[in-house]
Amino acid sequence: MRLVRCLTLAAAMFATPALAQIPDTVLLNGKIVTLEASGTLEALAVADGKIVATGTSDEIGKLAGPMTRRIDLGGRTVIPGLIDSHMHAIRAALFYATEVNWIGTRTIPEAMERIAEKAKAAKPGEWIIVAGGWTPPQFAEKRRPTQAELVAAAPDNPVYIQLFYSNILLTPAGFKALNIEKDEDVPPRGKLERDAQGNLTGWISGDNPTISGLFDRLPLPTFEQSVAGTRAFFRELNRLGITGVSDPGGFNLVASSYQPLFRVWRDRTLTVRVIYSLFAQRRGKELEDIKELTAMLPMGFGDDMLRFNGIGENVAWAMYNNDAPTEAQKEQYYEIARWAAARGMTLTQHWNNNKSVGHLLDVFERVNREIPIAPLRWSIAHLNDATPDHLARMKALGVGWLMQNAMYFQGEAFLRERGNEVMRLTPPIRTALNMGLVVGGGTDAHRVMSYNPFVSLQWMIDGKTVGGLATRDADETPTREEALRLYTQGSVWFTFDEAKRGTLKVGKLADLAVLSKDYMSVPAAEVGALTSLLTMVGGRIVYADGPFAALEETPN
Ligand SMILES: [Zn+2]
Image (cartoon, rainbow, N blue to C red; front, side, top):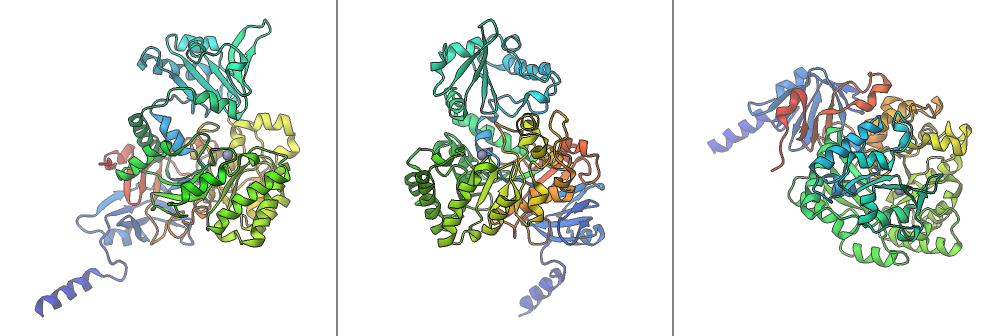
């Protein structure tokens, strides 16, 4: 009896009205952008992976016990962890340990330096690969590198350089290793480029299947290299404040491609929350494959670190990059979409051009007449030149828009093709927000774009390309806070996570980033250079640098 009373008393002492639990960690003296009604706060407390209290440094400091980790933020800005709502992260991770990237290089010699560095470390005959994520306007020279420049940087290795899904540059050793001598050696539509004198330049042009087919002839990293790549890539994302991604699969991303990710998840060493959808692989067998793959994979299966989230961004090959689908092709798409809707699945669809998106919306509307799709949170990705009429149809269906910074790399080319009247409205971010459409921020990395979320945020707020060209009207430009919301609150809608992530408030997961400078006040041109000094996922410090470096918790 006495003991019981004693325990009750102890419980009453700890159960202060503010908090039932001693925090594991308190963050004090910060500028915490909560994206909630509470605005910007000084401090928050974390226990068991969640935020358990927010307030002034004084209030939160008092909650700390002797074992609580106290982190003095020194006035730094904290934001909710960034979430890229459309990133091919699983594939990027597979190759991260073995590929070279040109992200952030500003001249061709700088890019060649990265090739030369890799060549020094590589074995003779080992491939050196840059699989996209760059564009000529990022270089001061405003051109593509030449084969001679590549050979000078890596004389003894085959080199493969990919530019979007349109061009490949190979060194002579690369041509030899892949047995390429003529156009027919690069099916289905490869063309070896020649200069004015008729000599091969080393560049090959092609479409998406051609370039993907060529890439698949390169040796794959080993399983161990891909596991290491996955850990390293996710840490790199953590360095940039990313705590979550939505992954839409990709060409030739099959069950075996997911195994390194699954291993990292199983080891409890995943440091980015990955929500993934299934990309149809076999033309004509789409529904058959999806049925088989999902027989034991119900919608939403998984946990907060790794979860299945429906189908796409390829649902049916006949409607992928097809601006003029036939009625039969739309019928096939309808059958798959209706099947998904009947099973409560979300669906995300890659669509580039506004001029043809009406075909897709026709199908969505037809399904919606039978099964309301709004609760399923379907989405359309890309659609940079969306017009208000199509956005209104999306809004009416409850379909969200996955919007990325493609124009950061492609603005110059888009302006040449479409003219300024379209360019200045591309993409129509403000129009979509005014209509109440849900918009998710992201990059579409890594082949077509760099994965850096701060570069995407900078582009959202200043509308400038990597080459410095101003493209978008002020009317279509969100505020900094709105841009940040797209990358957090916007993104979590697509994965049904708004109660758990996207803002910082009591009860939500402790996913956040302490920034190198104040996102809200640095000059816009400096936003792209921001990094995280401390990134927390579910209360665990998965990345730390500078004054916080000692706090990083290495996964066991
Ligand atoms: Zn896409």
